[in-house]
Length: 163
Image 1 (cartoon, rainbow, N blue to C red):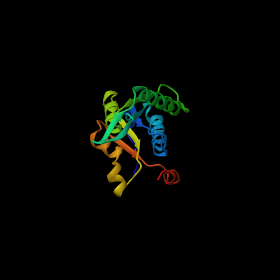
Image 2 (spheres, helix red, strand yellow; image 1 turned 90 degrees about the horizontal axis):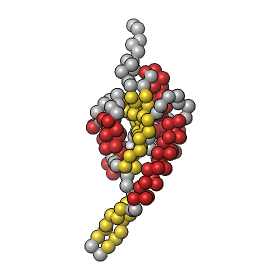
Image 3 (cartoon, rainbow, N blue to C red; image 1 turned 90 degrees about the vertical axis):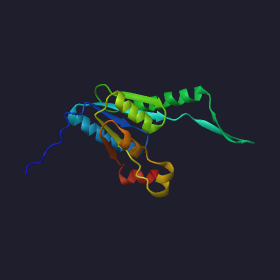
Image 4 (tube, rainbow, N blue to C red; image 1 turned 60 degrees about the vertical axis):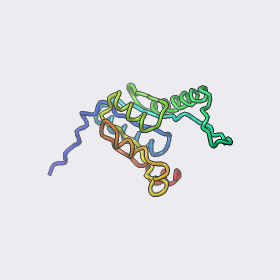
């Protein structure tokens, strides 16, 4: 029986969410291979959540927004780091998107705006209580993405350092 090759010609824009973890690096490696097969344009996205400080007052805990300069600095720093990752050994234009918001919301919004043909993202593979408490960005994206989502776990030696 002849092996059927995957149809990668329909991939024009591949979106890779990156949180600067080994899991995201594994997704980048796979996305690079898909780009080589399809000629797609690669886009990276990173979400920054606005930093908050919590103050205990007589009426309870209050969340205080930090000055906007803190958010702006975080956005600029993340964009610079993401551009360094995007520039490593790649020819042609690579899109870099750094936005403020919850990661699943930002990822799905950028995927819809491009529009992305595929999202390739790392997953930490958390289970049990940790998954229940922290949730899963990958799971939320899978449920809401406007295109197919391919999840990738980091090799075991990298995952052990993160856990």
